[in-house]
Amino acid sequence: MRRDTDDAAPDSGLAGPAELRAAIEAIDDGLVVHEPSGRISQWNSAALRILGLSAEQLQGRHPMDPRWRVTRHDGAVFPAQEFPAMVTVRTGRAQSNVVMGVELPNREAIWLSVSSRPLSGSASLGFAAVVTFRDITREREALAELRSRESLLHATLDSLPAGLFVTSRAERRILRHNRPLAAILELGEREELLRTGVLDAQGVAEHLRTLVQDPEAFDAFQARVVAGAAQPAEAEFSLRDGRVLRYQIRGLRDELGEWVGELHVVEDVTTRVRSEEERRTLDRRMQDLERLESLGVLAGGIAHDFNNLLTSIVGSAELAALAAPAGSALARQMERVLEASSRATALCQQMLSYSGASPAIVLRLHLSDTVREAVHWLERDLRAGVRLELDLAPQLPPMLADPAQIHQLTLNLLLNACEALPPDGGPVRVSTTVVHREPADFARAALAPSLHAGEYLQLEIRDEGCGIAPATLERIFDPFFSTKFSGSGLGLSAALGIALRHRGALFVESAPGAGTTVRVLFPPAPPAGGFA
Image 1 (cartoon, rainbow, N blue to C red):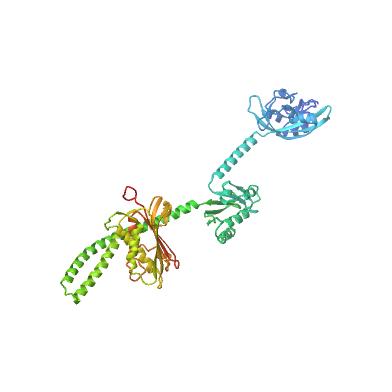
Image 2: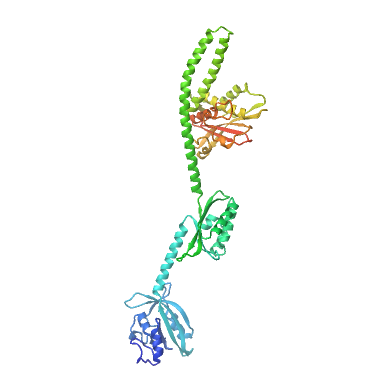
């Protein structure tokens, strides 16, 4: 082909009419023409600029020239026989947008998008070909940067503890989601539908509805979301499996402020909710403990002073009784004073037991024997119809305790159980046994004592009486609180004080109409003696 450069640009190697050459020179893409032999015969100035070659270096160069150093997009060597120019020259087939990495002299490698088209020729003689190419180095770098940021974004979203997904406004298709979402929602086989885009926001909502304990509350939340359009909304839902999820929805807006989609965040807040409940429970128990400790100090002080007064009253009454003639009115009055003083002394002992101020005589004893003695002592005064049914384990390990206080605890609990029965009486079941308990089990005990795991001696007293209402159940251990007209309000308070003083625990389970069960746990005595 003839090379005419009369009207061409200084670097142009184009032949043909001036208008055509000018038009080709005006394009930014490089253009070269290969003869059927494969050698370059024409080019535009953009080709020289992109390749960093002079006209002399490019003139007549063949694709098979070893000076071409070309790699594929994956870094492998690009064989010269597969260059787009060679394929078109050899076969006449066009090639489009082939990515080639070209190493240039004294320059960094560049990336080209290369296309080739046949001009003329035959299969036997070969084809002339026109090859166009453009520099896509910056595009590839930008694409690599974009992919890196995309990968970083995915890794960041997948590392979040919450599950999230983004939906379009119009179709509510899920445009993006992170990995934790499927696990939090327990999608199972549906995870593939989520990954492939088949599962939309409505499908996720329908699945979540099957998990919550209160579907109607979830429906109401969904209705508020629809009514509020792009307004933020959030709610917490308890699931059937015991977990708690927080569901948040936020509208997404573009730079013009137009609502374009929604961000949905689903977070498993079970641990936080339980921690808050435990903290509130602990705070409430600490307040109860402080209140009961204050009342205990007050009760101990009152009991101590009252006991001193009783000592004087009893002494004077006994002297007056001795001086009074037998059978006289004065003798009978002094007898009533001494009986009242005896009841007042017992009341003082109850208050001292609750406050922990009464002296303790710690002995090695057997729980079943002490309980049996208290039952025999009480049976004499039982009203008609009340039956004490015993199931006392005969071979329990011994315990270290004050026999008088364990006797008092048992009597207090038995009296409460008997008084709770209906007028025609009923059974009160009393049993002892050995049970194993973990530290978490004591959270349900009165004042939730901090006790270690292990074996404990258990005293259980169960009645079939009227039961206790929840509001009353919260106050049964308050000193001087009683629902009975003649009650002192110290029976359960003293029992709790005795249990705690012996490093044990007291549990009460009751509901209106369902009777009451009281369990008291004591640690067994260690082999060497002393408190466990």
